Image (tube, rainbow, N blue to C red):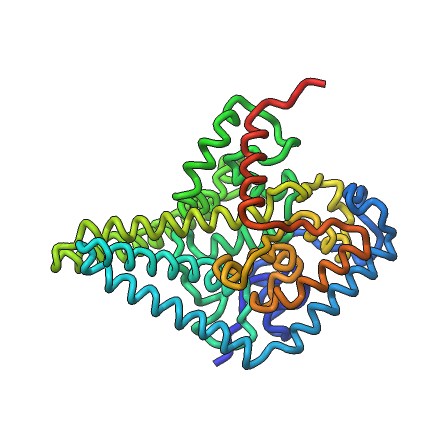
Length: 400
């Protein structure tokens, strides 16, 4: 059975690599903005101002070669990897929920909640996020495909693919085009106009972290676009209906079914608290990883002039200097969905996530050779840097 993806690939070819898929993709959802064949943007970012057009073009060719090399090597070992992660994730979830059925015993509650938390993190980060990017569409497995995967997150997959795959990955950190800069809630760049509302930046962020999936769900509705008339009433009604159905499904699974069965053993209340805690743990972790990939010191933001006339090489440059990595162990990379390799993910969003560690040293070497920053650091450092920015930008800018 052959399935094609309706997800655009900001890295170039369609995820499956054949012409038929590309045609379906173009017809279903066109990638916003087109890259220039040659030349340069109106203004290059300061970090890349020293590069000539020829150097940027050569940098693009080198990164294309890295991507092509990985695409040519994809095979049985990669397929075995993702199926193994799915097996582990499902085992953890089933065992965790089963343990919560007897969670009136404290040890069972701790064990069940921990297993369910790990399962939710794995599903959201290494499975859901990456499968919905089309990283595994090449396997032609209808159960592991960007058009069929239904992740354990309250936001509907199609809404997220639009705001994340289509918009964020195309316009990464471009102020005025990438609404992921603050998610329409936080002031996360000095160029964003300060308002008294922004004094609550730290409070809003602290509240957002444990309910992150709900924040993303509301963000994916694109309410500002609807208010400005850029999104039709029909589209908003469709998205609200999809969100309502997805929220109902998530509630039924986590807050009705599991606690209801646990009531048979007198553990209903404890099971409810366990699923609430597991979701909060997953949300806090996802929030930390995603914020650390885009907002620590060293990551650049860009004006619209910097993308006007942007070539493929310039797009690559923007992804490298607008993203940040997190250093750590293999386990940390797995639990982050390999978004600890955020730079590599933004360069190659359609490559299998297990390959990012392999290409990271090559990308770092290219950055060094072309005089570009490669921002990375341990988790606590990146989290601290991000929160420092949240606090700093809560305050009005100093007058000149």
